[in-house]
Image 1: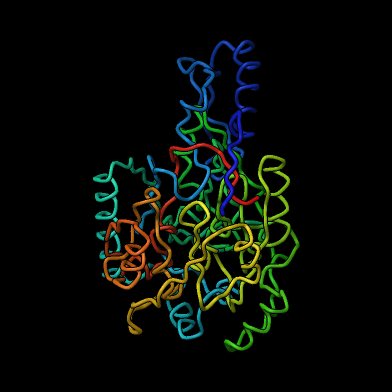
Image 2: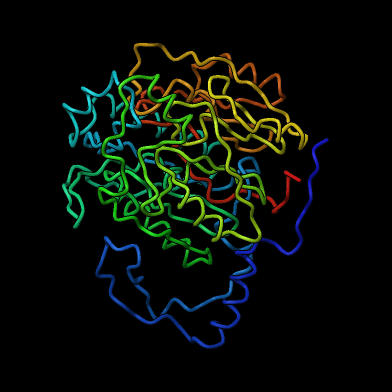
Length: 421
């Protein structure tokens, strides 16, 4: 039987916010007016004004609060397909994409994705937003940015990619929103699209943490990473060899998945052990970080491989079995094997596999947003007593994500509990 333990007193973040707010609130009479001069620095000063007093927010007032993947969803960030650009064909992009698409990246890197395809993806995501709002969810969007602009750091030159997948860059743990450092050079400045939203949440009482930004110098990547065939990928993954090194911390937020006080993560092509260790130290002692692994030739983002959809209920990809699955069964969890995806072979998936069919978004324990074309997984959810909210995002899938990827849940109504004792 699954054991659930409720933690009294809220999350570590809420307690810290209460303590700091009480101290600072007595010492500061108002915000100091400043000018926001830098849009590229993750440590840039906020534009504070004298008419925005310091206020102490209770956990109930905080606009940011989520403890898991299934509590009732109240507010969500949904990404944008507008201006999406093909990333340059660098070593880290090559390691994360399928060989049949390499000519596409070589030809179009730094240019926009096919415009007709992007136009259809934009329309699909707009409809997704409309349906979320109809289901009672507040929808927020990142800023539109021209991602084709070339930029240069002391270590590399690149163009941008998109702000389509907020799950990759933002993770909410309790009342704290954490910006992931990312691992692709084309995504170095992706955070800029989300900063207006994050600053708004911060002013309203949320905690805001930016993980150490990597330099993304050549030392972060194995420049000779040998990937010629699928067999190569399987062998390298089994040996624990990835394109990212341990030169400095890096991680994508989508390699982490939450279940109350327990957070599960995989070492992948974009998340290294230094990045995982940073998260472990940052979230301790309230949260435990568990490293799990899969028989996956190309690990990148956990939510199309291992997607937790309820308390003690997880979808586990049959093509990428979890090596630690017995640990979950012993804890009383139910492991569900999703059916094979139905996406056609001729549909372009430039950045992902067909298993986006299981990359679903739970609106609560009894409602799930699922692709309208994936009738087999719809039947699976219905057999579990879960209502399916159906939306077609086939063209949006091509850009690298399903419903879970295209969103970051900002607020879910629930309490911090332990589901993994």
